[in-house]
Image (cartoon, rainbow, N blue to C red):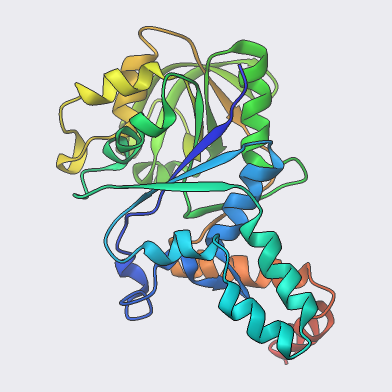
Length: 287
């Protein structure tokens, strides 16, 4: 079974980045000059995913617009002779097919995924959280897709975190079946450090079988009064196998202000037009 579709929930209000997100979706805040959501979509495209399903909320229309054609702007740029910029905008519009569905109430990640049910249909699909950027030689979601292709079972991305931070994540109980691959036996949403079954946290990349939808539809509210995807996975693992992939690469939590700054610096250091100046500046701060 091929993974053709990725669900990207983007309905959150982004209150941690106010006032910048009062009128601008947090997913369009740039890492230098590229909206952060474009990195996530590019990761999906690089994994062979053909359709992006945005689960949006009020004020998020600009996200879908970013991946649409902009003929008026392109014409103005063309008249100015800025053909390279025009080509860049057209490449963004041609990256992938984009559709959206509205999540009318903020009822949790599990509910956001459930909102995409009709657009996904009865096939396996990816879920990618826009707050997580993964910089890796093999795209993060592709690492999970490769495991799904072998097993035809759901896969979640894992990262070892300090025990004092496990309360911020969904955490698995599992057994390592080969290096960096775990058979998931259970999941817990944001456990206290003493109660956590491991230090393997679920990070914002998933490849899920469609059975998850019927589970989420009948799932009662969990922590925070929301429909938690982690709780849905805990029920799914009672029916089918779930694997956890301790992915390779660097993860940046850009839903956090310091994480956003880290990502900006890291991506700037990868650019020829900025690296030398930035290194010189950072060195000057030590003086």
